[in-house]
Length: 352
Image 1: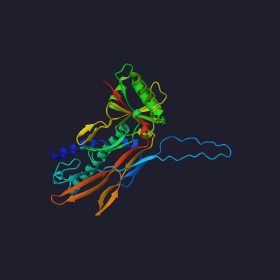
Image 2 (image 1 turned 45 degrees about the vertical axis):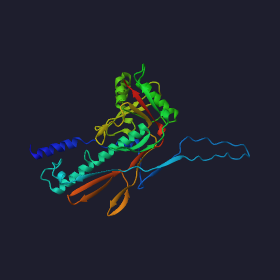
Image 3 (image 1 turned 60 degrees about the horizontal axis):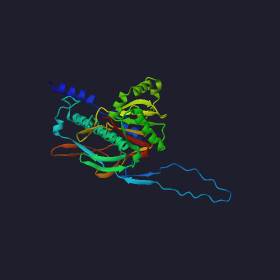
Image 4 (image 1 turned 90 degrees about the vertical axis):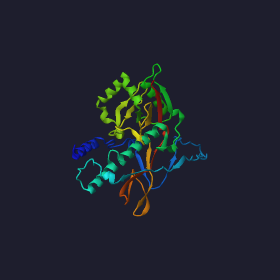
């Protein structure tokens, strides 16, 4: 087989294996983005509802209302940093996307492009990391930074214990609707606004949905109507997110957006693959709650000086002469923070 054929075949595979395209899940779950060149950020919480003003009789003094300060914390995320070498061995390999006679400069530029934005490039690795981290905040109630050695830091948002429950689908009379109503009732008891509830299901929950004919009938009826076009834009066009429309379970008046996140590529950390949400778990949440994505400052050497930069990804390069190696470096430093974690609740199902 000629090298040209190998190159063209590899290019076809390259084009077909783009894992993340377009809008990402984390961008919908944590839409308020804050970029800062500071190494840390501070969050102040003022939770609880207002009280009505008190009326006084003639000549009475005004009622004293002491201002109650909220609670807060300061957090400095760890930096994620990776670098990829462009060395002699790589430059002499079969080049996907270029003819074998392409000049050295073109090959170097194409390798740079693939390292940054290719299927396994830094941009997609960044999306994968953030999508998993965003889901973990909703499911676990914590923002946790991990690497191949384990947990580096955990920011616990202190979700009420009552908002984490289990549901036994093996029990007599257990249904998907009953499990969903339990979660809706939990959020309603918290005072959570229920006009824009969303429900993201793990694989076992989704299989349970598909096994109940009454649930399928209602989903099909909604999807076959013209109402799908009026679904909120928040979860539309997200790579890997399957939307099943509004769903009102028996025993409740509240409708819920049914969702499942199953992108082409599983989450993969240091060679270990896993689902973005565990198969037995499902999370119900107020999709309109305030939720922030913080991008903090990253030290970078620019023109011989250390500066702090911020953004989804900060790129840099480094080089050495003997042997000749060009390093492509990518770093991020972020955290996801929900406005009120008690506007989320999680259920772990027992399916067998």
